[in-house]
Length: 110
Image (tube, rainbow, N blue to C red):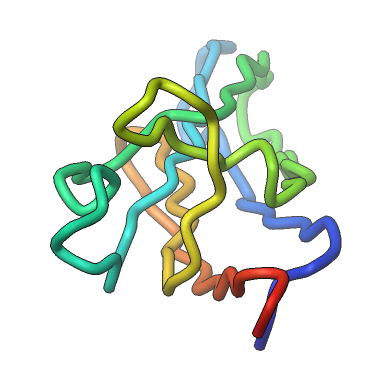
């Protein structure tokens, strides 16, 4: 599906322990099929957002990130931010659990 509008991705985090604690959810952009000539093809993953939450014992909380395609822009060979068309994964990682959401970015001319 083309991604021309903001997209929301979420992960549910649960404290299964008996102590309160903090968890940090990291959101990564992972390029899948960027042409080899593009600088972005060298990128394995890019952190674009994170959120720290506090959970009491047995508490569950959803953590969501709204993604504007411009937020996931990468720098071209001239050092300018650019959204490279192609397939990406949005990876939400808590260190113990990871969730991936596919996303397709198309150029304005396609």
